[in-house]
Image 1 (cartoon, one colour):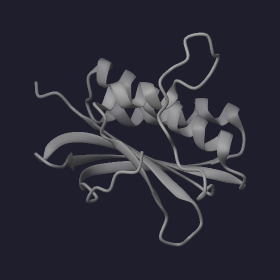
Image 2: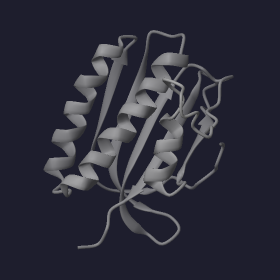
Image 3: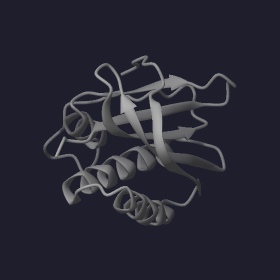
Length: 148
């Protein structure tokens, strides 16, 4: 799925992490994301969703990227089109020619459900774009935060 959206307006601090091509480092970025989300005062169910999205997007990037690593970014934002509070998660890798494609899950396969899960959690508000510098792509997901 390739969806174009206007970059959301940041409303607070974010984090950006480099993960070298080591799947074990996904646990580190999950810990960073969990601390960041808790520091933002997010409720536990929202934090759980953030962690799932981070894990799925980072895992896919590490699986398909050929370069030395990936970048993971999280930030608090106002999401289009209704300016709702949310979390923006973006993962950059060097695999420009491999764009993500959400598949219907195969119930007996051991993999292939990640983007389906991201799609379900975000209500379909995710996508990808080729980076302007020509060095890969970014896959993003926007997660609205329920009003309390």
